[in-house]
Length: 378
Image (cartoon, rainbow, N blue to C red; front, side):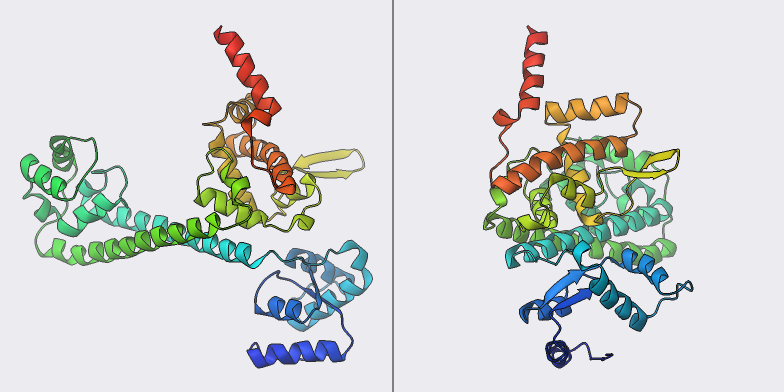
């Protein structure tokens, strides 16, 4: 039976009614979230998610053309659910607080990506019209750098500065940097000069536009970070992820949001590591045996785990030792971080399943390294 509905509130109600009238109890769909999934779950229907990459491969069952057609894909999903139900796992959604936290951390990550992109555009622009401003402060998108570009938009305006005038202006801005104003002024003088006059005024409008966008992005990132910390503080699993080394608040929230709070989703630590893409993919055919990078993964989850794991080597001796041994074996930095991430996921999964915070005193591998370091120091 083929039936088409509109993607509206009435359309979703109609969809649920049609499925129930047809005696349907389970539905296959390609994405795990959204209004359609919410409506199906609210109606008591079982939702089974089949990844779009799997659907692409499954089309070959019914023809060799491989053409993409939504109506045909709907048939492929339904027939796969009928024939392969034992291989498919129903969707068990996370709790509303976790879903809200996930949306917040992903939105913040998108804003950070926009900030980085806009900062790169501003840097490229300034290299041509005001090179002295590019390397003046540590970060071009810092508050003091944006304040400087708001006040001194062109080379001609910056020429008015002297070490004393720059120092006075910095003091009014509450500049807390350790660089002497004379050194900063010397950077302006030694940098290539930009255009002045009417040409500089024309470029200044572009500079002000980038600065305005960056200022708004920084404000919204800060506001969203505060909201994330508030949501994290009230979450039942917060103590697990905030106890991890170098996790902080936002990073802990991201780990929690991407892993979720549904324990049944990851019955084994291997299932979590595989979805995160930190386990190798083995391909074997005849005498050929290849261990390669795992492309099929949850990108958001892998980014969260590797970001966390890569930073722990600076604070945790066990993590540093594991990373260094991987590098000694000839692995590059991303591969070594994935090895470390897999080891951390074993620990995180255990803490997550038992609802216990990470305790360095109970981490036996870490304690062995600490004792070894103490013996070598003695």
